[in-house]
Image (cartoon, rainbow, N blue to C red; front, side, top):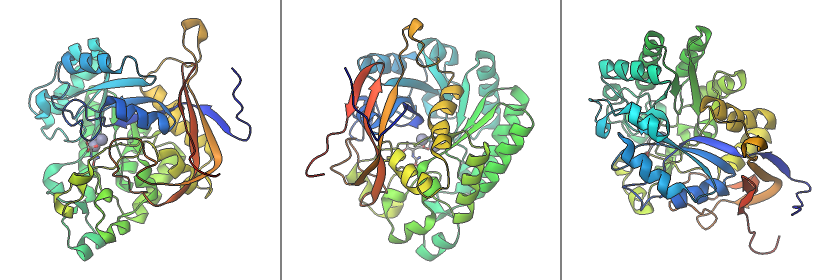
Length: 388
Ligand code: NCD
Ligand code: ZN
Ligand code: ZN
């Protein structure tokens, strides 16, 4: 079959190493099928699912459930386990069992393991098993039940603030423990300039430390919260422009390896409440590429090549994925077609995922994925409604 893609970009399938598919336990927000549809519509051919489900994967059972439910989906769905039993921060999960079942990483995403001795033990065990540890990095006593970044806007809006120190202190501790144990540490959703500096210093020491940043932290700042939009309530919170500048610089200079969405769907009825009561999280699989293409590539802040490095090659390396396109091993290439001219307004109807808590609703974006090819199969094709 010949597919005409004249005037379009053919790129490697995007990989998102940070998604919440809410399955099992919160499938009114998303489930493995709806999340996979969102991923494919966003041009992703690989995702790493986070373990803050109910029940969470602290042993092999949930991993087996995930495997079974995802086996016929044309998407490379990767699994992570949680660091502690029932995500309670005390006893370690069954790492060996999780690894045997197919988990490629363990993480405390959603709730940082505050007990340093528990985290040290986890990192020692992970190092022995060569398991990647992904840290959520938020010291809870400093975060102190804040709801947005602590600074000018938290003061003006009268909202409780989350100081940057909460993130920085957590990153500092985790890097020190990485140094003690030799474990591979990946810092999730970096949002501060000091965090970038700490990761850069760790890399300079030769530690196996990597980091990611989200599209929303790269293009939005806390100023956007002036309208109390709960779709902008997220962890870590949107920060000031200076922090954002440092994130972009860190990304360009190679301190930040990966762009990951932290796709965190929540139902409208959960988000349409008073700001303090809304859950944290932004859904973003479908808009990630057009947001980054429109706001960064077209504005010449990053090259397309570098953007793709952060969304394909680097996450594949960190997750130790087999080389794509090795046909002798039965491994065909995963590909995405981007239409660099296609301009669409983000609307709830456009989004195929179950939840619509997307902060870019109403924005006009350019550079949409129009076809996603997984192992030789056209897994997604964008159907454009109306007159073009
Ligand atoms: C995530 C979620 O909703 O699961 N929320 C968020 O604000 N990022 C959890 C997380 O990534 O820490
Ligand atoms: Zn997190
Ligand atoms: Zn997350």
